[in-house]
Length: 472
Image: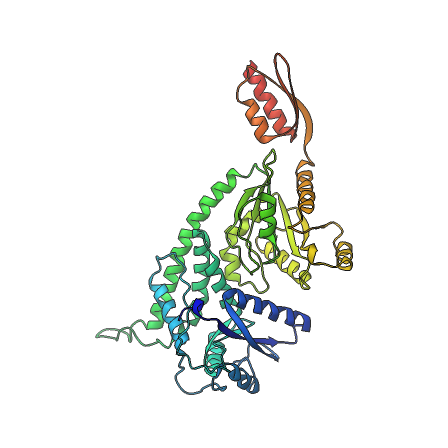
């Protein structure tokens, strides 16, 4: 039965270690719930426990395993000394993932694994959770142990994020990036399929058994990843060429935590039909539009992928070409959801990821978004904390006008005002002035037109030199 035909329910598992504070733990678990909702599941309940480490083989203690089983209808104990048997849902997921490996040339990220569950899963009406989501990264053996005790499929945080990315990626580059991360995530978990038998036996003169099924599968994954990276590199070269063409145009990049309101702000600033949803990772593909009303010179605005705590490193690496938009931008707008209690940690995550791609030296302007959700006391406190920031609501036209003015002021700081006289006999110069400079005023006489412009001194010098050469 397809997921769209019936609401699927999940139970969350949170592990609090001594290194994680109470508030940070609660925030992380709440964020996991939003991730699960974005994936299309309803959170049925949660099981939390304090543990010395997240590396313990059972992840949860015996009592908590039994509590988890009450939500899922599983045995509540980890089977030992027997071959691990997966649920029908997990087997179906792994079979689809293996088919995906065999189709390495296919660039479409089929949502294998999480999109469907077998309706014959033995779950009672009360014990109705059909998937367990754990708020940490799990090893293959930890996944196996939890599935054994819960009796249903188990996913860790990375698995959930990768699946969301695969569903929201639309462009060819984004699909390639997600697929590379997905296959990289799958590789160490191939052992859990149980298909470890030899593919061929040893013959006369051989040194033993042939390549095992596991080794064959891993080799297929490596080959697929290599091919996908080659194709991604070719697309990246095309992006570099287009980016080089835009180098001379001022560009503003919106960066920030996922669901901070970047796409809403992008839509309001550019008048474009950028997708706006109250979901995590609604935007994965970089969108570039001119600031509207169009300025002279034209200012471009780019909307980038959002960040999140514990963002898998494979995804950061895969989306480096997308994040390079931030690296090549003239100005970064750090968009913060000021109404979110965890805004400080979200800002830290944004700064950390940008540091990974080397965008720490790009000038930035902090935007405290969603002020319409704040009390007056909160507004005062935030402005005291971020005195240089701009507080606004993407829904307020006056706020947007103010932001537009700030952006124009920034780009005009190193510009000068000057007069340029263009004789009527000189061709092609007027169009260049209107496209590349801000025309403050213009006047005509019998010989030509005089423009009062605001632009960088080197561009003004270049235009005047062209006029002199044309006259000669």
